[in-house]
Image (tube, rainbow, N blue to C red; front, side, top):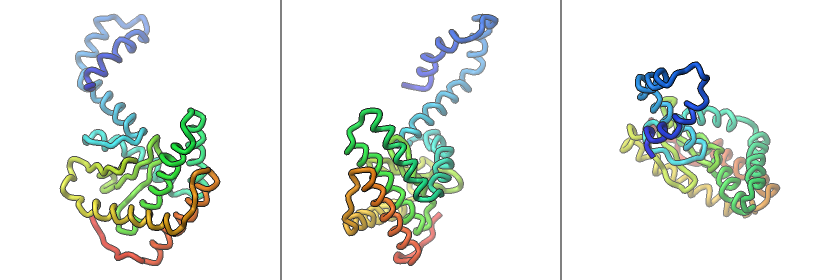
Length: 225
């Protein structure tokens, strides 16, 4: 559905809520004069809804919708592991209350976010500004120039901003290396994650190990734009 079609569906409800003092002619004139602006607001609202769900962006507007979310999530990521885990457990409880299967929630939300945060730690080692996003479906954002230029969704797909396509080939390589490293760390740890208590232990151990790799400079450091 196009923004114009969405707007046409919303306008009757908007009209119905207007005070009696607004005549139909006045409202029609306002819509005619501001049609382009109203459609732009619809585009922004749809982008924000997609972004909060963790959907892969495609257009420049889709990527722009992630910018305020990344600013918010960057602040949460900078908090203590205890605070981050408390927020994660709250999101897990919300999904439990909604009736989702426990193992599905623990895997698709809990484990996915824990691993994503560890990947962000290692990507920062490679000089990428990476931010883990705790959304309906966790995602990993990469920022350059204060804007999101790439996003890896929960299905493992990496979306690149239209203006940066063809310029971030190194990111594909680095992200693949980091994903492999997290898998190897998980296998070495051999910890369960299928309950909240076990996920807590797994997360703390994984993040500690990821930071140890960062601090001891195990991998060669490189700088990219």
